[in-house]
Image (cartoon, rainbow, N blue to C red):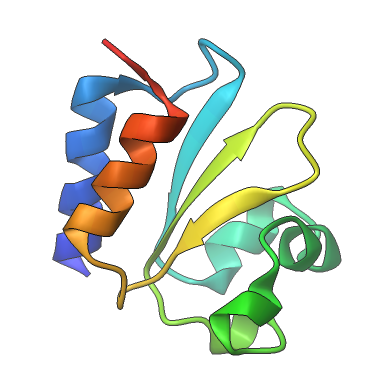
Length: 98
């Protein structure tokens, strides 16, 4: 779990991820954190949970990191099996560097 949190913090240090350009990074330890701020079905559709070989958020490999854009119908989801290089590469393409 600490690795995913470290990746999220590293991205936060180097990129604008809190809506400055309409783009966001979120870190979730478990599904309860997701459901505090978003409807289950909306989350599952937005982040195409089925791509991650599961039918719903209950079976995701937590913790997870998501990248999202305002007004966009979809987003990026990374689970604990994603590599630092893959997540950081996507961050470089998705977010504006500080």
